[in-house]
Image 1 (cartoon, rainbow, N blue to C red):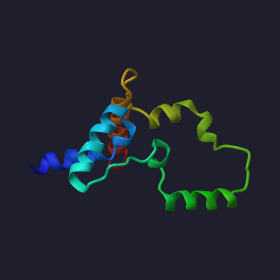
Image 2: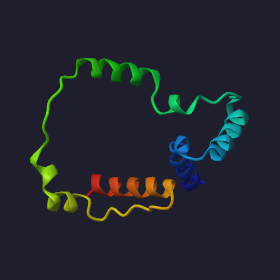
Image 3: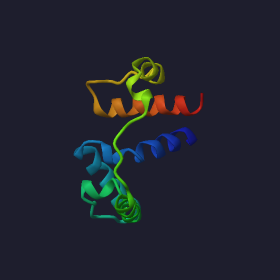
Image 4: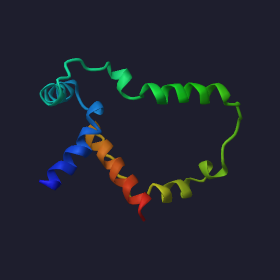
Amino acid sequence: AIANYMMWKSARGMVYMLTNQMRERYMKYLSVVNGSTKREPRWKECVGITLRKQAKYKASRMVSHVGYPNELTNTTKIEEFYEGLNINKDNYFEALMDLARWEYDYRYR
């Protein structure tokens, strides 16, 4: 039961990245659980109001700089950094899961 709960928590966080059909199923679930009948437009789901305000403020305070770190021109360093990252090119959701697994492994090496 705990494993199912943990899987659901993980999947629920990625619902906005799935197909409309899957998002509709999630909406049916929400209508049963908490009575929600309206779904936010897809563009609103990615960024909440508070984060949007913070992002606008941050963008207004940004100063333009031209340049990039030397590491970005060193293909050996880039290949070493992304070693072990294999992304499924045929399935968007699987590609997201591949990236999430790699990021988790990278953070906890």
